[in-house]
Image 1 (spheres, rainbow, N blue to C red):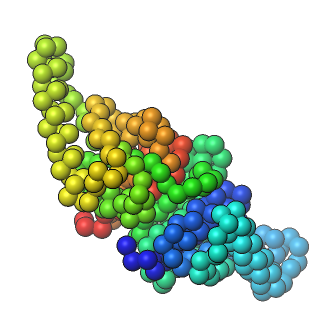
Image 2 (image 1 turned 90 degrees about the vertical axis):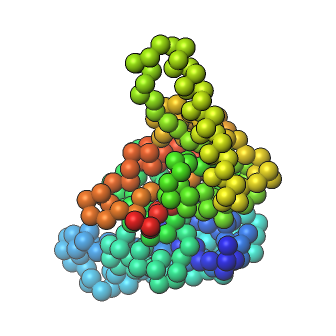
Image 3 (image 1 turned 60 degrees about the horizontal axis):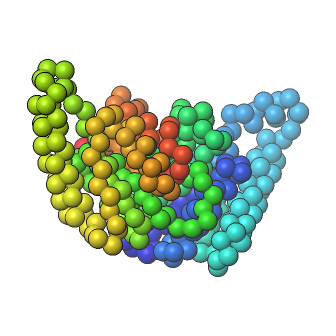
Length: 297
């Protein structure tokens, strides 16, 4: 990885976003990456305040932007203090507009290699994430998006990666190796069977075992091609069942602090959905989730 790769933090200045700021600062410090912290103010709600209180809209905008910049600086300083590090090169930006559009434009303008966002509450992705700004940032998916939920006390030690052998999971594994190069890895491939209802149990068991042995060999080969080695203490998991459920359960059993999955680079109507596997992982994972979009389509 290019050590100067920029990181964009999308902060709403909440307590939850402090977790994201701290994680981003930790990653940036390890890689000497420049950090840009961004807060976007949506203008539409401001007009209700202006009309109800007879305020000058330009003065209100200016004041809100000043407060946002001060809040971002405070978050960066507090994160550096919690981590006991010298702050990496950083910049703060406060903008007016639509959060997703502004974040996407900012990511492109600084050539961001990672966007970090926070999540709210115990079931953040289930209760708040889906259908909100953060999910839309993931769906836009121009660069990898890290949804940070757990206060970082250390770098990522245990990483679970969803693998379906597609180009999407290939870029996801590459990203996992870039951002957590020294972690232990659990690679999960899930498959769903259809033939158990049509054959006798003994034959089914034999076919299942043969299938899993072939998938295990393929998973090892897939990982080694991308640079996974013995230093990663890899646990290869072949699981019968729904892929999203299998990945979340495997991550929980492995005590993973990061789960990584790919999302398809679709356009039009199909781009509105993340896909059932990625969506399930985002909704149900208890730790951080890194989503990586495949742009090969």
